[in-house]
Image (cartoon, rainbow, N blue to C red; front, side, top):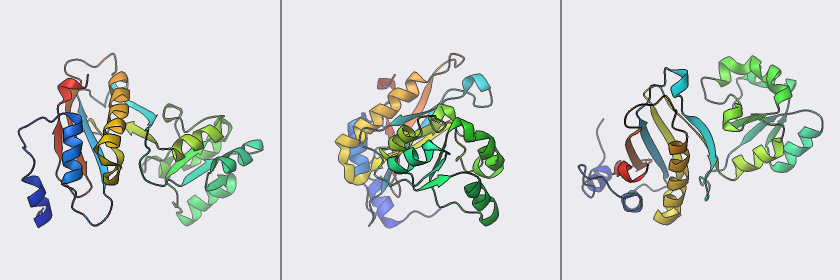
Length: 230
């Protein structure tokens, strides 16, 4: 892939052989962000686990202190009193059977996160084949299946993110926007990394944090000194 002029200029400011302390790394990410829009800052964490084994899965959710800077559209599956609870917490779409039908018939996906009450999971299960591949299937581990649906919606709106391994044993997560500045990004980074470290499976052997890289949407990656994170 051909890199643009701005990217090449930014990359010159980063020492590819160096492992940077967290705040210094995030300052570099902010300083090398050259796009005309407010870029998202992402973290990429390679773990020394094998995601093919059930006992080595790393997955969870955490509320970032400063949110992600992104407005999130929430779809809530609820019935009875829980409908009003989800609406009052700020869910954009709340319902049951009719929403399942809309997704199935119209291939409708105008939402970013799906939450559900446990008594709605039988219904939501029908959407497993379409929600699963998109990473939208509600899951108790991620806090998206809950009887306390109002609280679940509020946390997502406040900047709750889910972290999970991909097939290459890497976690990719947003930790905010360039406009947050290094200090707020560092606080979000530290909160997420503490959760990932805490989630280390008992079955994981050897080095757990293999590499940690931070980057903005269009900018070059900066390696973080992972030795200081455990």
